[in-house]
Image 1 (cartoon, rainbow, N blue to C red):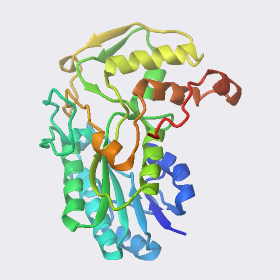
Image 2 (image 1 turned 60 degrees about the vertical axis):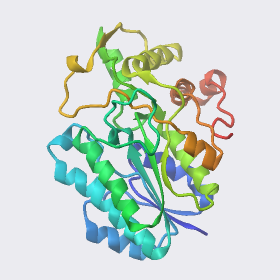
Image 3 (image 1 turned 45 degrees about the vertical axis):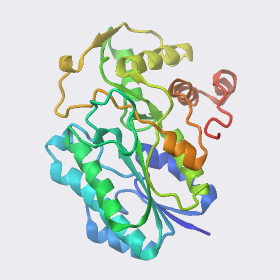
Length: 306
């Protein structure tokens, strides 16, 4: 069977990929202790031993604000390591699948970004991810780079879990309303990846992979809290106050517009991206006991397939 090397299995996307990749081959799933992307020698040794036909790399340094003070570490994991993976993929004629971010753009474009738009990161994390894209492309290996945005799920540290926690703890929430993007469920990313591999016919390059539609962080928070309350996951709905990015300064600047156009992905792989709000309901409903999930979850049948 096809040997698939999967990195970062305890991350948001890596955790879901362990399940979705199983039908496609033998998955060798490694965590940070088994494959440390900050250790180039270990990367080369693992790839030599595993000799995979497909490398799927969701592992990354994702602490956006911390990256401003840990530039070297962010660069090692997000830029240098993907280049090493790509060199190995080229040597063994393997397909490399890698994940990047909307933060490669500065957010000044009023329209959803397409893959060929000019990149201009405004923080160290975005620069490290862009350097990773460029390192992969420079090797000439077979590759698919999926840029995604606003990733959330029921595991790890993300906006969804933060909002569910703060809604229980606070009487009012102040949420940024002048940044726009597409909240994207980690499970959808994993399912889309598996479908893309199954339909792979030599396509390669950059693809945007996010849910359909867009909202602000404030709109996302409102949807999380109202849906969670309806499903019985929250006892109360605290008031949400709109604030600007200037009202909530962070070490790393964020793009005002993180919308990504997914037409290339849809056309090349015949995939239809689901709406972010419908995916959020599915995500929250999956947190319920199975009896409630069956009765209350929205229909997600074939939501990825065109």
